[in-house]
Length: 443
Image: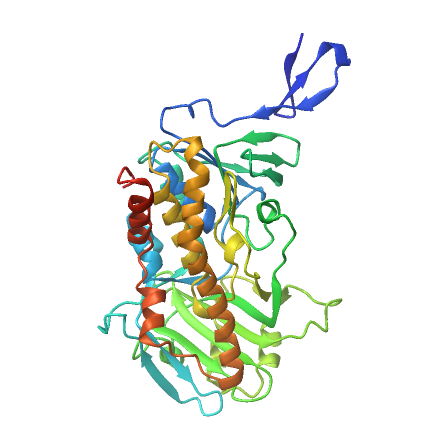
């Protein structure tokens, strides 16, 4: 007679005739996940992409578990831009802009690395009217607000986050994932939000596809940002990015902007790095490393490095994902960097991941059945793949432009409309109505 035993918090099936041999059993979701009209959803990866998709599905009554490999998931690191196109999705999902503690930006200032002189740029919106382009937010503030709304009280069953749950395999056709300790979890929908080194992507595409190194590394850190007269140039005239871009020689660029209600300053320093120092390379850096790499730049940026540190200085080697043949297979799909990992030179990486999550919510309203999933995922790919690839390739082209021209490329009105004017929620709702009928109960 077969019996269920528990070992180290996991369920195993023991068959008496096999002298106690243990093998993993197939598990489903929570016991309350069988309510009519709701899906069981496994989201692999608990970052911004995974949380956004999970929140969007939770609001439609679906039962969502996030499987996060780290034991204590946090989003520390640097800040990011949350442009208008991403804010539309966050507003739709009930995210509080006040809790994001963002700093609105309207343009930017390009500073001559030789003379220190400033050129102010105020970016028009697609309508031609000067208004907020978006918010500068600390990554941790965005993450915590998404997590609060996804897992707290609200519409639908709260999202469940399983930390220390490393996913090692996926069967997209059956909707199962396998954890490192052997547990197999069955779901109706699997979303791979596990980043540039995605495990789920390998099983959907059928081969290992790695990020392509761009030849550029960046220093990243955050400073405390008290008011200091010598740093007024960081905030006066127009709120936005301050950038220094090399005119000749190896590519170098400094970017600085405030976040967390203006109390922190995000600092990024990009530079050519041909990967010649692989053996001795370290992800950590110092103030002296930055100064050495940006010798010859006007010294007005140096007082920034004297500000109290809010985080360590890290180095990131930047890469982008090659365009994929598919984002979907069976009952599984990719979202965020797992689908379209991009370079940061359009400030749209997180925004596109947020758009993915919002679109998923619109295409999987209450009442969606397991049998509906493959066709809904085809609609998702048709809707999102071109958009993700547009941002991916556009960012690569922006880097080429920076290296060749030494200025941030100003996009024509058509490109501005495609970046900032895009409404992911409206577009996905229209797609749903056209392909599946006006039956969505998503809010």
